[in-house]
Image (tube, rainbow, N blue to C red; front, side, top):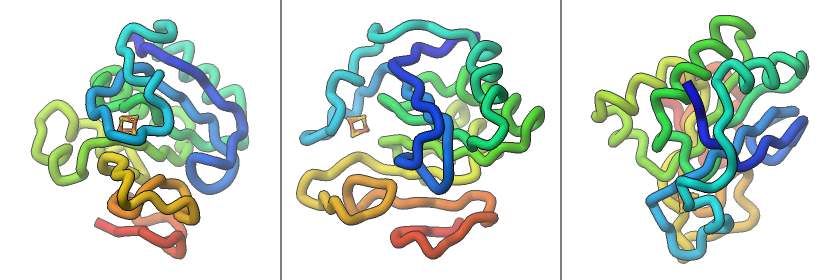
Length: 163
Ligand code: SF4
């Protein structure tokens, strides 16, 4: 299984707590006005990488947890589900996933909901320029929620919702 990737950041602290390997995928159809990264909208951008290859990159850094971002990973949800399942089963690393979809819509969708059991924290919802707040940790606008699905994390981060 392959994922179309724009970039990978190593040991970043921008996409969730602690050091993380952030995997930025290509493609997003939400087209939020004011998106910080419109070059990520193109589904043909970047390069395809095997889930196996991405898993090796994640495993290579023993100390970093993992973030899926983009673009929107849920447009390639089957391959990201496979990657998340392998990461969880083989490393137990913490996984954050950014998406422009809302949690309730993901939950109601047969395809997308299959990734949820492997995600610790979902940052959901589109970017809304009128609600932009540069002081918010780990998200761009105040409508976006940091949803701890596994309830194992520090919920002191403002905007955190436990489901
Ligand atoms: S969901 Fe994210 S990547 Fe997609 S258009 Fe909105 S802000 Fe940009």
